[in-house]
Image (cartoon, rainbow, N blue to C red; front, top):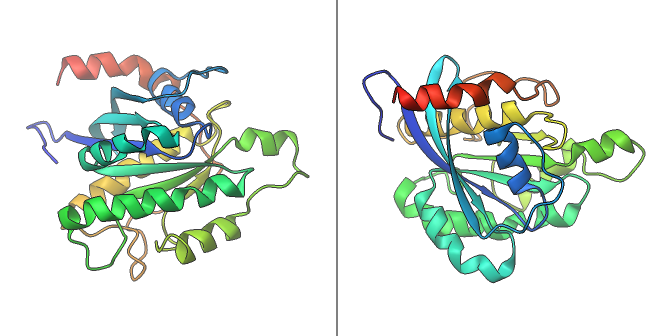
Length: 231
């Protein structure tokens, strides 16, 4: 990934997942620090923001992708353009987690030659279980557990159980900032010698915070324009 003289970096990543899991809501939370209740299905949209992660500025291009099957022909294009991937599912729906299998298989097929990974399907990726606010409102309802998610990621998707995932909520901002920081760290670490932090033989190089420990920082959105003007 290109860098400039100010020790800044640029990355492009895609937000993927089935329809109505909240991909656009997450992207809007990251870029505008707000939540829109009603949102038309996305075909594809691109956003540019700047964020400081671990005292290093990252200029990020976020591709908000379509989850509907009728737009699947666009997937190859954005997967080729993306360096990392945020895979989103509804943490109250196992079906939406299972839908991610087709995305991981397609990403691997398209990116394997570019990344040349001997470890198989490891690449810069995190999983986000959105709509955790529904669990907070109804704690006795059915939802996916951390154990179920890790097992599915390992056995069905072929990724390491160390692959980062978070329970989050675009509606109330829960873990939105941490999710963005996690994908930046994954891309940053992967860039160093093409060795992902999700390698099952090695622990993550940087410690992970608790899954429910972070919310969005409203100051970040205001600072985007200033940082872009200095770029």
